[in-house]
Structures are given as C-alpha cells and as structure tokens.
Image 1: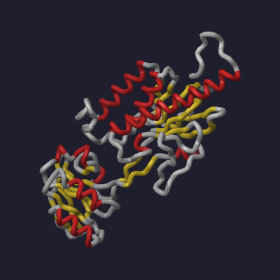
Image 2: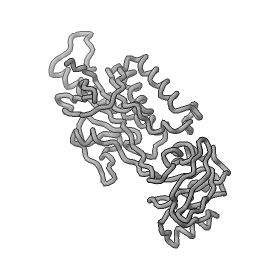
Image 3: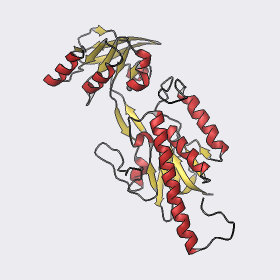
Image 4: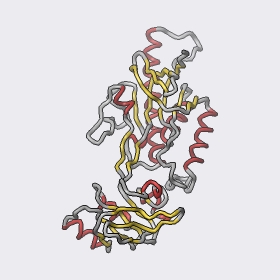
Amino acid sequence: MTRELFGTAIVGGGAAGLSAALVLARSRRSVVLLDAGAPRNAPAAHIHGFLSRDGFPPSRLLEIGREEIASYGVRLIPHPVGSATGDAEDGFVLTTEEGSEISARRIILATGVEDVLPDIPGAREAWGRFLLHCPYCHGYEVGDRALGVLGGAPGAVRHALLVRQWSPDLTFFTNGSVLTEEDEHQLRARDIRMQDGRVTELLVDGERFGGVRLDSGDAVPVDALFLRPDSRPRTELVVALGGGVDGAGFVHVDGSGRTAVPGVWVTGNLVNPRAQVITAAGHANAVAMDVNADLVDEDVRGARRMPALSGEAVGA
C-alpha cells in the first residue's frame, strides 16, 4: 500500500478545518483534509453572524471553501479517519476507515462535537428548525414570537434569560427540574412564565410546529423551543495519540490550540462548543499560523544538520 506524505493533515472539513487548510496551503505547505461529511450545522437552513456570509446555507459555505482550498492544491479525502498513530519526531499516520494511509508531520483536529438531544419524541425532527440551541444564530428569525426554553439541564435558566432578549413572549419549561428561589426571582423579574411538568413530546407536523406536550397531557403552543444541548466532543483521535481530556471530555490545550501531544493541535468546536462558524474559522486561522511556525522551526533544525542545496525548497 502506498502511503502519501503531507506536511499537515487536517481531520474535519467544517469551517475550522477549511480555514486552517487555506492558511497552510497559502503558506506553501502540503495539506490533506480528511472529512467524514457530517457537519454539526447540517440541519440548519442558514448561518448567521458571519460577516459577508450572513444568511448563507451552511452547505454552500462548505462548497465554496472546498473550491478555494482545492485551488491551492489541498488534497481532500471524503472519508472518516479510523485510527491515528505516531509522533512529531517520526511522523504521524492516519488510517481511514476504508484502509488508506496518510503520513503527516503535523496534525490539526477539527472534528467538532456531537449535540446529544434529549430523549423526547419529535426532538430529532425539530432539531435545527424549531428546536434551537443558539439565540445568536436563530434568535433574530424568531424574534417577538412565542418562544420556549427547555429546562432540566445545567445553565437552562441562564439560557432563558438570554433568549428573553429576542422576545417578551417566553415560557420556561421546568421539565421536571426544581428551581431555586433565586432562579424564580430572576425569571419573574424578566416576565418569563414558568411552566411545571415534564415535556413528553415536541409537536412536529411536517413544516409546522405545534409546541410541546406535557406529562399532564396538556399542549402548550410555542413557535420555537430553545435548549442547551449536551455537546459531546469527538476526541477519539486525540486520546489515541496520547492527549488528555478534562471532566467534560474536552481536550487539554494551551492558548494556541496545542495539545499535550507534540505536533497535534485542535481547533473549532473541539476547543469551544459554543463557537459560531466565524469564531471557529478565526481560531483555526491562528492555529494554522502556529503550525506553520512550528514547521519552520523544524525545517531550520533540519537544515542546520544537513544544509539544503542552493535553491532547494525545505519542508513540506
């Protein structure tokens, strides 16, 4: 089997992975981007808050990004990575689930997170359309309408206070949780209604949303429901390479996105699950610069050990 060698392998082809690939390719590095084709924001119709791309379909943004990196010679492999081995000294090896092997001097992981939805009938069908997580992404489009916030998760009350900025017609569904006296005071201060009872179903009928059904059998109409989902980081490759994770499963990194494993960086939602598209892309831009600087340092050390021939390019 032929093993292809690249300067940097990037795993994850969302906004973060594409941004890192663009910067490194423009730095005249050889880059391969491996992408499983399952972006976090696929259910959403549009992205927002991205200057000059506000309202863009996520799929269109990725399409443009792929065209741009391809114009600089980035190799795109549309397959998930099954395993990762090696180190910065001898090189890393990524093996796709189809069995192809890629060798790289450095690795950037932009594998993101998986949003774990509540086990409520209708949640999957409503996700990204009527069941929403980010008011900065979706709040303007549902502003001044009847909204709800699903309780029962850490930070849910704080999330309701945030969503209140977009609509005065807001209901907080306790969903079986017990509110503290301070929670109730804050919600009342902002005229947020509190609805007891556990949510048993989201009422989705094709392109219409009827609200939520409670365990009492009552249906409460809302036009959209916000929640704080449990975000599960995709850190399998980091762990396989020897990297550590915190109690929530996120990778230990420094300010530049470097992991404890020399030669391995992480970026995007794998660093910050709350990062919007523009934030993830910006972080990856800086990570790519740091990776290139690290490769330059290694190129210098190699050149001092074995001077390059005049005019010969050093490093990949």
